[in-house]
Length: 234
Image 1 (spheres, rainbow, N blue to C red):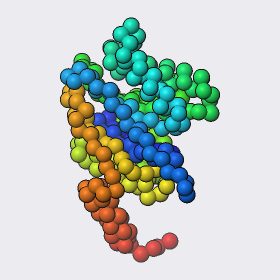
Image 2 (image 1 turned 90 degrees about the vertical axis):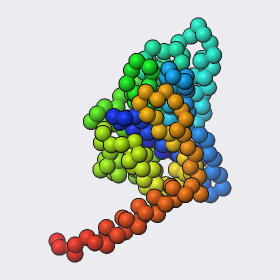
Image 3 (image 1 turned 30 degrees about the vertical axis):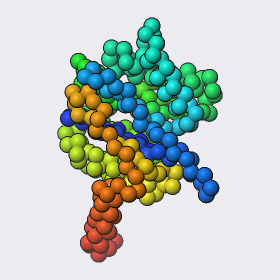
Image 4 (image 1 turned 60 degrees about the horizontal axis):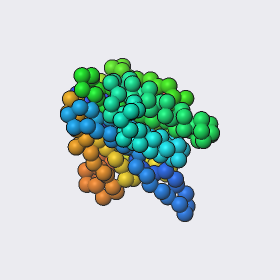
């Protein structure tokens, strides 16, 4: 299983992904689920993946291979984010058709191409997609239910990138606490509008001091607020 969340905000974008793909008593595997395609000063594209690992790895391999072929439309020569979403959707649909419907996958595509605003899409196994909006500025894929309540309570389109990242990390912490199939390390990235850079990426392990600090503070805060609820009156 996995959990990925991406946010499209007024000042940029936030991406957070776990790295666990299989959990059991005697088998735990980790693979990166946040992938960046970047041309300095011209475009930055981020793909997050959930679902069958063989399917999503095949999609990413095909997308990378096509970027080396000048006579094909690919991620680094498409004219718009919409065209990129179409291309990714077509590739995902082709891989699933080849391997079988039971080997599904879902992707989040976010980023910016020069001349456009940053855009964020969720791409389904059928190859179709939806786009984030001012009213719905985030997407989740994978094990989303545990981390959704905090995002719905906190996140707005004009939330700062710093607060949005804090929100995404707490959302991930809630998921880590409730589902063993989601696990560390995390890959996180902040993208500032018109930055066209992949520089602000971080790899968060169990020993990361800031993530450990906010996890502890959040847990203590919840217990403190719960203890202050008025006596039950039904």
